[in-house]
Length: 310
Image (cartoon, rainbow, N blue to C red; front, side, top):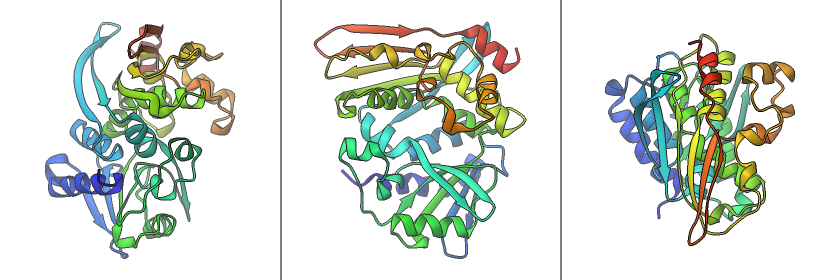
């Protein structure tokens, strides 16, 4: 198999070729790095969000939409499936690279993280990369400048001309799509944090409703987290049984039932004070291959309706 960054680069090339159709903008910086605006100075879109999710997961996931109901309202839902959950969701897709340069702050996700491989999850999976390209999706409310691409190039050990930064804001259509696609990732990561071997997760499918785009980054962050915690549904096929499957879902959190706007306010928006058990999907079905099927959690459409302003 090609490296995650090589596979993601091929999808970035596709985004560049179809930039007009996707309604995205491509910016070449002085060091020849490419910043792709998927939803910062442009509104973003469903198709842009789906392709960006594929880029984040290095093409190892299938992403699509469907229409379903939330509290009687028809809403787009995003569904992601992968037979390579450890690589696609944890080594590639997961957010984990905090970017800070001059007056820029953002969160990086995608396969470029595997070129650094300092997060604990890489040791657990036993994976790291050495590649010619670095693809890092950046969640931020401004576009990265050359100081950011230089930082990424240095840490990833690639030339600046090999750095690709597709960028989006949380408060964009793209941001809502990317967030809704994270249900399976949350369940897989939560299992890993509980001590389950992520390589024993054989397949993962997750879906969540597309949160209406909010009028600020902060409001968008609360809505997209509500979408996952109270509307996210996941089906996992796993190799081994485990006595803590019930702790994967959001119902296991002490703060379950509170909107994320209240939860974030309680810690003055200091994300380091947020407990990890907050971040789980609403409902999970776990199939142990050759064993039992376990169902945990529930959707809370009343909380979603309140969060979305119905």
